[in-house]
Amino acid sequence: MQIQFWGAARTVTGSMHLLTINGQRLLLDCGLYQGKREIANERNARLPFDPKSIDAVVLSHAHMDHAGVLPVLTKNGYTGHIYCTSATRDLAGVMLRDSANIQENDAAYLNKRNAQRGLPLVRPIYTEADAVQSLKHFVAYEYHRPFEPLPGVRVTFRDAGHILGSAAVIIDYEENRKQRRLVFTGDLGRKRLPILRDPESVDRADVLITEGTYGGRHHAPIEDVREELAQIIIDTYERKGIVIIPAFAVGRTQEIVYDLQRLVADNRIPRLPIYVDSPLAINVTEVFRLHPECYDDEIRAFINSDPDGDAFGFSMLTYVRSADRSKELNESKEPAVIIAASGMCEAGRVLHHLKHHIEDPRTTILFVGYQAENTLGRKILDGWERVRILGDEFEVRARVKRLDGYSGHGDHDDLVGFAREMVKRPDKTFIVHAEVESAQALQAGLQKIGLPGVAIPDRGERALID
Image (cartoon, rainbow, N blue to C red; front, side):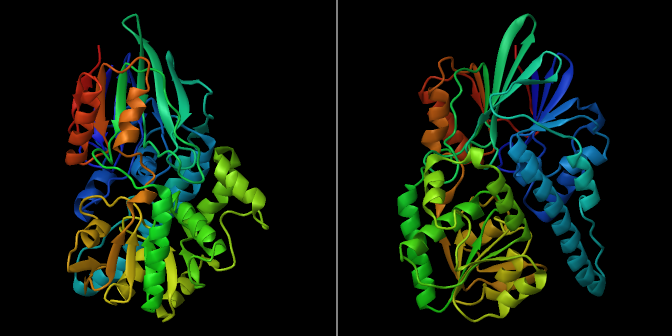
């Protein structure tokens, strides 16, 4: 077998790994690269291989950095299946269309400005029609139900506990008369987070491709994070300011809403309006309601005890779908909490909220998820004094806070523990989906428990498996 790492290599975005098994080509993930706009547009629009040469695709989960360029794959000639869980299929159905709409709307917005300034026009990477066409290729299998995407190649999904429907991918195959197993973690979740079940273990692997986002770092207990969230809201409320939470529409938004509902129920935060300003998050929340089979015991108990039986709705919460209502939020002078996508501030309605409030010292910008290098979110988090938003430059006067405890990624101990729990540990391990420093920390941790051959591949690098 040959593995070629075409994405999420020494970075955390653009997951894309091409396997060649007995002459057949299997693609693991086909994710959107996020970073500097010029580089991202070029990389996302032009795949590094011929889509027609791919025989099958296996998708670990629906986040855009893992699924976001599937429409590019299919519009350029891929005709096979895209295998995933049913929850991932349902999430991708709303997320890919939303991604296309954001691209088309952002292109239209920027092109108005570019036309006035004599700058070249920009084009979306794909359209909504392209996204809808890609959905025709999806085929769903549930956890623990093996299937063969290619002759002689058996795949089984295990619950990765990262987002709804996320899967660790087990690939069993025979090559040169040897039975082999490759395990791809996708994005591995955390234990004891609300809503979703904990990640499942895998008993053995000959080859492991593991994410390493939080290599060398550790998360605070979720109970401490809720208390910090409450205090940030209280402090901002007393300044008569607005809390802007850039949040991924899948998983993170639902976790924040669930925790806010608990804080309200316990009278731990003031009564103030809370808005989820994201059509995508609204649609995704409906998908969450359709998949209770993914829930953990805690949220089941909460739903059973709640008068309305709803973990994602309460009196102070308003879901904002229309663009006009979203614009009205920017005119309000009352304290509020606004949750809006995208989580890394690279697109979507959060950009307009930042544009209106980032220069107001009463505002708090609260990051609850990972911010990749070169994204707007990372620049704000790193303390840049001035940033560019939708073509204009703004001074950062708002308070900037960060809560790492909401991360849906396992931390260093979770990642090392996934390998440690294996009865038969891998002979070769590849760390992806991590910046170099984190990958090196995880490499040291895996070597410490005795794993041989732990590598950090470069983009485009090939690895041969005997």
